[in-house]
Length: 149
Image (cartoon, rainbow, N blue to C red):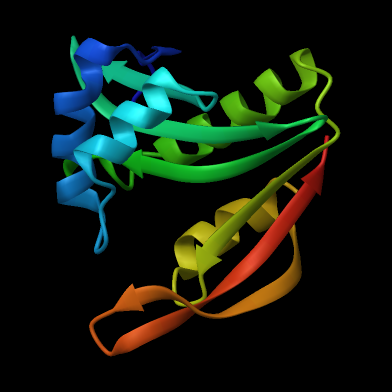
């Protein structure tokens, strides 16, 4: 477990490092253009830093009194160190501070580690999106989950 991480809002200057982590961590990574739009637009984008390097990012779409978690990344060499828990704690804390009522997310049906993490924080399954994610075998279903904060 890593205890000395710093979380801050992302800046335009962070996009290249965010993109690098994105390319390492995701089967279907976001494009540089999408990341730039997120940082410049109405999304909330945070980065997690450790030892002066960006090791993860979180992208949230705010809609009225709800948030949708669009993207969560931890650089592969930092995975398995309980940083996913740090991200979800941060997300829920920020939501409470912002008077957000619910947080929604989609997760690959095969991503049992993430599903277990979300379950531990009180997210529950509210739906299924058939063939939502691209995969090596065509398309993969996504579970839709939510939490009331």
